[in-house]
Length: 136
Image (tube, rainbow, N blue to C red; front, side, top):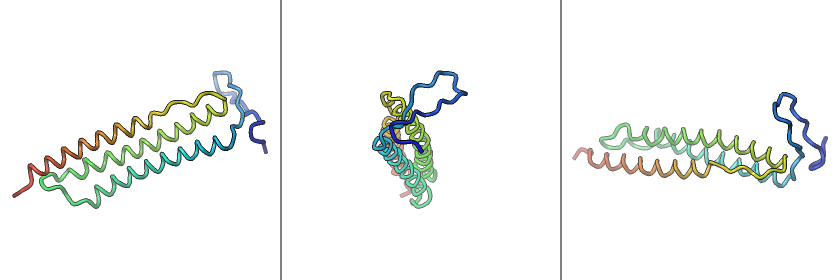
């Protein structure tokens, strides 16, 4: 069993690039990286559950029978995207720490901000269309 911070990682002979010198990062940084990944995973699950709840539990919008699906399905897809991207981010951050490189930037905050903005606009449109088409 290796000790933290002293054992270099074994290079992969199938890699085309010469491997950078790697070492086990301080456990605190590894755990922090893992906690960040788990936070993004919770965010992804929240998006998926919200989408599923909208599609399955929300009453139909008057005059807009497709409204629940327009709101819920994209949330489920966004949750899946966040889950996949957060795993990639975790891997890249872990590799950077092992190599002593700067941590890579993350696209996740941008994905989250754009997704929430777009879903707010779509929600407003569905609600306005429902109000206009609502039978009197």
